Length: 133
Length: 133
DNA sequence: GTAGTAGTGTTATAATATAACATAATTTTT
DNA sequence: AAAAATTATGTTATATTATAACACTACTAC
Image (cartoon, rainbow over all chains, first blue to last red; front, side, top):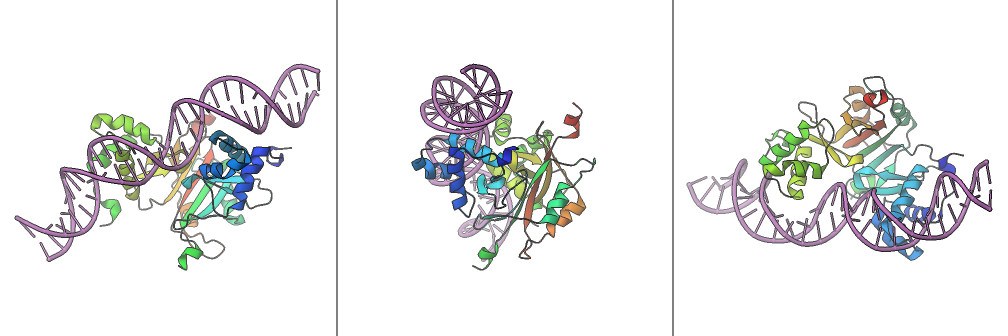
């Protein structure tokens, strides 16, 4: 069985549970302060759980904001091929699930003809909800 | 004249000069320690110069590694539309200049039909030079 | 049932980035 | 050219993000 379907440890469950409760991406230290009542006391416990959750495809890191968000797809098999749209007013990040773009990027070859193992794409703009205000 | 063609201040020149000397992306604190002999003493001086250089399109930030690299295009008019390939063995980052991909992303519309103001795309893989070794 | 791997708990510290304030230089407006 | 506005600088302190290192525990897998 490959890594992504392995079951989750206690700390991994606690951290994932908190991330899933949030619509928006959350910061590592915000996770920490919110799960201290569950017995997670120190940064390494959070970061280790995050590392594993990312490996398993349950969580993605939003690189441009050092934050973490749960993957919405049932069985994410692409922890290293993510596409987000990020609102620079409200900081919300939504995962974009566009097969055509996904394929385009997965198959993209650079000038030397090499294909890549993964990618991270972040689009920036104003989200629809912020446009209205 | 818009921002990107404005001339550079003293600190901006010092910081850009150091970044341009490096083939690979450099870290902010590496910039700092290397330009102290030029009279730049503290992190805010580096980060402020970086902010302006990014606005002016002279430098891009590689988000996944918190590092900074000079833009190779003569007059970068797209400081907020960048495409990199990053080698996870040697950490080198090369800017990808692919008109078709560039246009594809610039014109990409999400499921609601919205177009974005900018994007950052990072491809991950092993670079040709590391593949040989 | 013991060897290997993954997970936990903890302390300390490293690495990245910004707040806040005082001052100086430059540009724009009048 | 003086006043006003904007941009840049210098500095201290501190906030934020992330990992090293070590001791120990739990769970697989053979």
